[in-house]
Image (cartoon, rainbow, N blue to C red; front, side, top):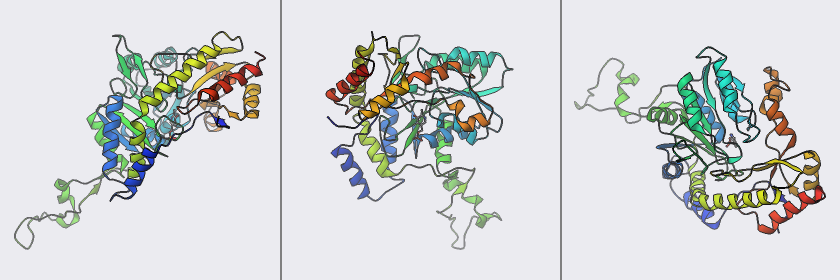
Length: 401
Ligand SMILES: *Cc1c(COP(=O)(O)O)cnc(C)c1O
């Protein structure tokens, strides 16, 4: 048994190391061939047409709000039970975040709460919604798409917890998270605690060619390298294209910055690591689902467990959450036994930054209630059987079971 037991942990194999080392020995540390390979493999994994690799999940979110043209004052709806970055991306563009409470059964943003917001304001008040596949449970984006059509909204799916996750649509079809059929854009993170690790890293997926091209441009400073634009070069200011030799020639170095972008690129050695990890993502997913089944089985009839993630088809189990009355007591008891469970999340609207913007206690009663009781148990593919048994035993011990 490996003690301590964290709530999440990366897994680096010899193959991963080999992939990184061979990239370090190649001609490209960044902007080389590993990026396109990773993007293609990832798009095919989630079933989208396009993928854009970026330097983090947060950078992915920021590029999305920029590409969708979020402007100061634009209102965007998201869930309070998420990592702050899901909301912050709206603020980066000066937009206003409006939280919609969660459904206490699924822990996901409650579509009825979103509907209430939309129906109680003139059409056009809200510009977009950012549903989050929290803990790895896929949001039913078909339903959100219908709302989006009716109210003229865009959708960014924050799928950081759910590569390989899916929901079942109204035609009984599996719809993979980030497949681009319902959301305009979807984003993923490759932080070490997520399913696929590249150190820092992120991905945006989409089926929209125009948005795809915009994202590529914004990822690299808003710069375009297109030979056909060379006549914009200052040398050609007076319209001359024929040079002294008598043949038309042009400056091969010409590029132009067309809008304000960033450097949000991923490096090639990170892409090599991510791509190597992606190759066994499905194996990891199966292990996560097996761990979830065991947790569900262990706690299903226990009175001290008020709620749990459970066994849900298509759930990708970034987290396995249980809800208990004495959450602080359990957290500390587990820590005392070197089991580092975690809390996901302190509701975003109650972060001091968002409180300063006017959000306060009781604004999101379901999210706040969930937060008081939730605890995320160890969940990662290399968690050993005896380690999970130990975690379960310690939880039962705490509740005198
Ligand atoms: C991890 C995470 C992010 C941010 O990803 P980074 O790669 O850490 O920037 C955004 N949203 C959610 C839901 C996450 O879990």
